[in-house]
Length: 385
Ligand SMILES: Cc1ncc(COP(=O)(O)O)c(C=O)c1O
Image (cartoon, rainbow, N blue to C red):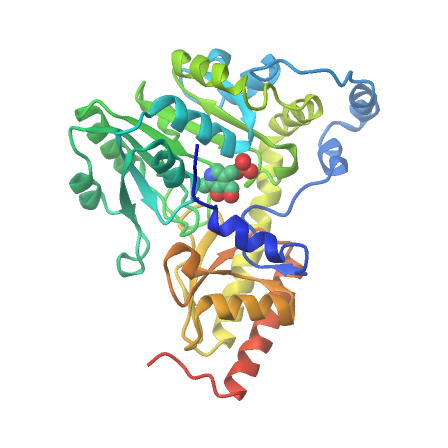
């Protein structure tokens, strides 16, 4: 397969080892193994640790252990372990599904902007990809009327991502049901990348349930990477009707074979304590939301934003007359702060802000950004008219 470069990953890899404050971080600041173990009852910790240290590092059960698949399945409606395939992150889940479900010449609807693989992989397969755009002009919302224009009798798959990376857009339940009905009306499937599932932002409308819950045309993708704060485990999953799971499993035999043994075991611990992990992570988001609101007030209009409606990412606008890529490169090089330039998503003068950073680092990153802005203004960089 010939595939275009993953633009954002290429840009980030140039700076991720250099920066000290990542304001664009895609997930929640990660947990340690100690944090995970501390969630277990004190009396059992030693035994659990012994179990991990004594675990045989052989290949694990290919689809993911029954314990893990059962724990994942319990978070969906009418779902059993046979509906789950544990994968190497959501990235492998998406890759397998797109390759299993699509053929050259198929029509696909994919969100734009988006986590790039969602459109690049179908394009590399040779599909005809129609882009469902979220834009600043519509407040970074998914517009169902636009989707209606994009879906045709030839559409095989509608790909959505809720909550959305990078804008924080969501679909409400009735809106996702509308997407599902549109897909059903043309015999298509809906693949929903639910990487940012679980966090509920205070005061926001509740995000739609997983698309798998809506019926057999719905396929969900999940991961421990973002809202759980466990990206290093590389544990994601597919939730789909069994034949699709089987087909993805067969393709996976050629790619990564099975999850890491320790990752599977640690993922089981994470699922046992999902609610406490989410409470920890929700508190980080709420604190950072307050920090950014306070910071914005001090910026005297230089920055403005639409807070995320779901998840932890959103686009923040900067009214300085400087291209976002130049701003981001200099901020990384001179101030060691990472702010993903909006141009990587097609939005000039925007940056992607992530709310999952440790609050002290988040505050420091914002302060350094203010210092950079002051330096630019002093050197004569003006505002956009
Ligand atoms: C929307 C979306 N899907 C999938 C992924 C891949 O995540 P994972 O670490 O689970 O492979 C990401 C990572 O940024 C993402 O933002």
